[in-house]
Amino acid sequence: MAESEEEVDVLVQRVVKDITNAFKRNPNIDEIGVIPCPEARYNRSPIVLLENKLGVESWCVKFLLPYVHNKLLLYRQRKHWLEREALADITCTLLLLNPDFTTAWNVRKELLQCGVLNPEKDLYLGQLALTKFPKSPETWIHRRWVLQQILRQSSVAGRSKKPQQSEADAERSQQLSEHLARTLHQEMKVCSDAACRYPSNYNAWSHRIWVLQHMAHGNVKVFHDELSSMRLWVSMHVSDHSGFHYRQFLLKELITEVSQTPASTSSPQQRCSTAPSSSSPPHHSHSQANGELSEAEAAAEEEWQLSVNTVLQLLHQEMELCSDLIQSFPGHETLWSHRRHVFYLWHHWRRDQQQLCSTNQESSSPVLGSNGGPGPHTLNAQSSAGGGGSVNGQGCAAEAMEVDRASLPDPRDSKRLKTGVLLPSPPALPSEPSFVSGVLDGCCNPEQRRFALAYKKWLDTVISQQP
Image (cartoon, rainbow, N blue to C red; front, side, top):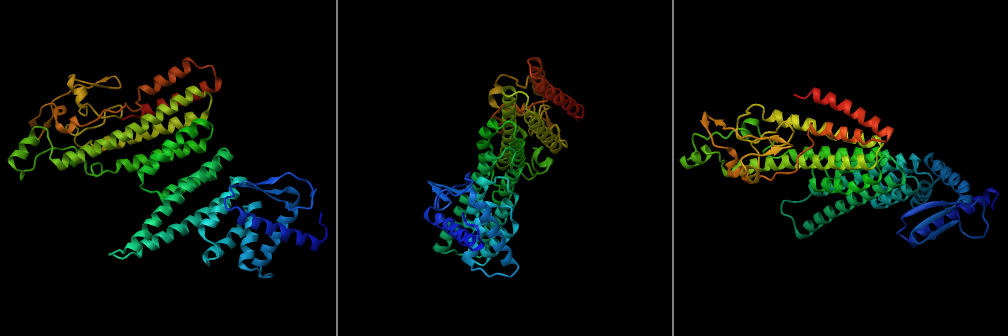
């Protein structure tokens, strides 16, 4: 083992070069690690490359880390000059061993801005560092900075497009779009891997939320895919609060996006009124007087009803998942906290929907019933064929309604309402006490009983405040 300062310098320079050559030989390295080895037993390189795994023998780390650290500090203090390529190699080695060294990331930012490095290379380096240090805050911060550079470049390219795009410009635009999609997919994978390596990895989940907010804002399909893919993950990590917090974020964003339909953004008078226009043709007035809407109004009403059903289905499926996990894995506070948050989302969403139609409760537009689902006048053709229906066991008797003082027939006969699809009932207030009572009746776990009682107490408070 080298002992003199000159020998250490020679040794460390050789190790840095070996690490650089390892990446050149195998650009698909996907994991790094330290191999326990107290001393050098053979006259060979301490860098081990096996398949796609890169290992560093532990005996050389105590020489390697101080060397690259001092080199970088001398460079920043303008006491030692380094070529750009050498600087990139030194920062790479340093960050693989200590990714929370902020100065090294700042140097790489400068190299990236001057074109020595490309953003993908820095994202790749950060991905490798996270395999050894999955919670490294500086690594996640640097990734967000690099992603911002990528988004800025794409934004500039999009603004520079001419009104009449050439074929080359269109192809370039398509390539940028595909590149952003691949980057988004890769970030989701990096976050998932880091979350699996370190439980309750707040930094990884926060980064995942940031990526969706900045790279997939308004893309309902991406949020739906994330919610579906996360279902298995949370089922296997029932104590990871950060993972369930991520699902809560997805639900809230989906509810917001789905609810922002043209019909839902219109005024309550527009949605809750079917009064005919005085300038309408006679046959149009006749059709509207019989509970039918114009084609445009019917399309808007159907779109609004679809958004309501989608939200109800999302919340219903989430409560079903939560119920199944609580019963399968008793005694986990995270599951009860998640159920409380989902019910909270449903409660406030239902209140907002009721406020939208509060100005015209007797109109023929669908309103929300007391259980948060479509009201008595929003049944599908199948339920109306039987002369009545029920939602969560509550009767839905039809009553005549008035529009402009004209008595109308049962609105369930309207073509607009026959196109509705009755989805599973949402989590309703009566069902929650029943669920808690069922858990308490068959409870043998003291922790499960304590969490159930706490949830029941919280639920009673919410119900007591119910308008």
